[in-house]
Image: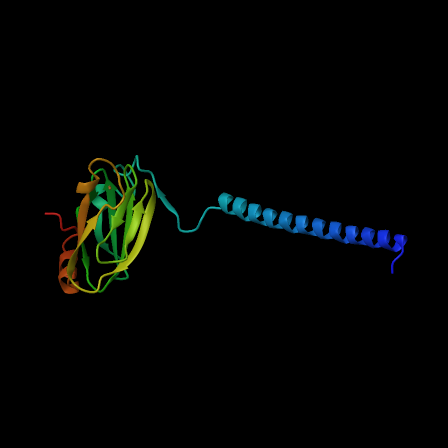
Length: 187
Ligand code: CUA
């Protein structure tokens, strides 16, 4: 049996413990919110790795995406780089030629609005966002033609915006690339 004093003392202890736990849980929530805020602010203020930019207003005037630099080029290590632009409502080049069985790096951007960059029959499916360079590594196993439709709605001409990727035999490609610095299959 407990006396009245014991009872109120027990209540006081219980209330104190309860307050302590309440304080602790508020502190835990506060720490978690603080951590989330710190990480978010930290990421927002740090430049992200591997983000390359290209000013859509001056693409045609200077830099990597001037017209004479578009198309396929062979790097010193034998890999291949394809530079392309999407604009309302076409791709430049309209027809991309690449060798089979070779590492290929697509570097593409948009000259106006957001376009889609999808190569049918592959896992390449990206957005071309004005201001940014999309870098997409690829490798094509065998000679074949792939259609390359714009898969991001970009205006009234969206349905008609598509190009193609022509994968040709490695030997045939090196013969072609010996004659020109930038290759396309646009006739
Ligand atoms: Cu470009 Cu849809």
